[in-house]
Amino acid sequence: MRLRNNPKANDILAAHDDIVILDGKQYRGKWNELFGNSNPIYIEIGMGKGDFIIENALRYPNINYIGIEKFPSVMVGAIKKIDQLEKIPSNLKLLKEDAILLTEVFGKDEVNRIHLNFSDPWPKKRHTKRRLTSPAFLDVYQNILIDNGELILKTDNRLLFEYSLVSFQNYGLHFEDVCLDLHHSEGYEDNIQTEYERKFSPFGPIYQVKTTFKG
Ligand code: SAM
Image (cartoon, rainbow, N blue to C red):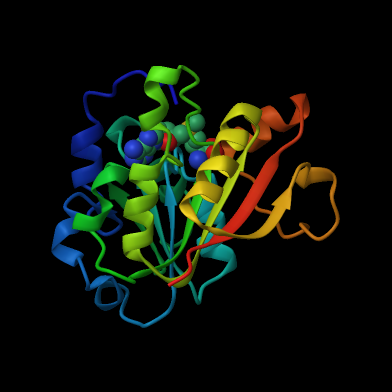
């Protein structure tokens, strides 16, 4: 996501410490204590401006949601949207962190589901390792997900989708569902759209794959 650097972003994040977590390490193994319940934890890695995670939190109050983003300037977009709500959903937190470091932030088996939505495709071969579905990231996800925990990827980028299917297959993930046109297929009426999805779905199909990590 390209966004001009906002020099005040870090101050804005710090002023919203009721929802923003800047140092996630302190909650490793204790996220349920922070939420005050033992509900499942679903995270979105690369939440951008937060449309998807905010809508999920409002729709499903019995799930705890954590939107993860590495750029403070991008997170400010999500904070602005939350500020417009009547009340901050108690089942929603925003975490500033790089996905590759998530084992420092979540304990083993602490997360029930990971959403990757419209992840950056990094089309150049020399940047393959930066893709959020490359093996180094799958190692991280396996570590923090419960047995049979879900990893769901949604994208409009065919090359990233194809790369990810192969990466998941090579890693031994179990394929639960593959959809090649999410917006024109039956059974996906509860789909919650992301900002990128709204922007790019008029130009072509949205692909989705749902996988699980076996214990
Ligand atoms: N998920 C949103 C959507 O669908 O509208 C945003 C998609 S945007 C193309 C990808 C987002 O992932 C960007 O905001 C980027 O900063 C974030 N991102 C990329 N790599 C990341 C990483 N390693 N850790 C955390 N966030 C990352």
